[in-house]
Length: 166
Image 1 (cartoon, rainbow, N blue to C red):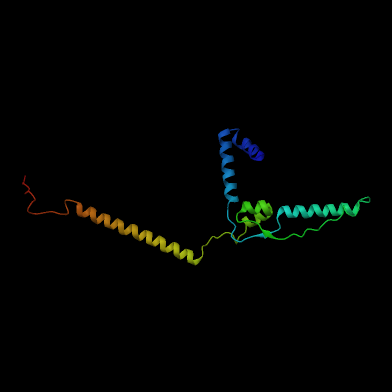
Image 2 (image 1 turned 90 degrees about the vertical axis):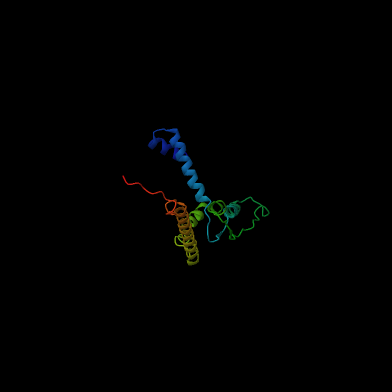
């Protein structure tokens, strides 16, 4: 946030409304990126498990170097890192398994579905054609009803008054 404030104050000339708009826009983009779904489920060791394993390894290293430590104080269990489900959204992945895995999941080219599957494309095409056909049929029907309602369409020769020659 502080970088955004410095960046904005340099380029925007200390305009508070522009600064707030810039912050709102960047927070909106960041929030939408964190709520983006990851298609493939990701499994990795959770960050807290990694921290606990590193702490136990450092404790074991310091216990081995201490000379006056009793044997009961040095009994540590080694923790094995098991891969667990990280979450469905990018924000969940970042919170549980780390930001580096979340960034790699967000920029994964397999995650980006630029071209829909054939089934979805055909379904979308059917819906579009049906929608356009329905609008066209309704428009033609409305034009026919309007044309039929016009008085000049129903000219009755007996009711028409003769036009006087000038």
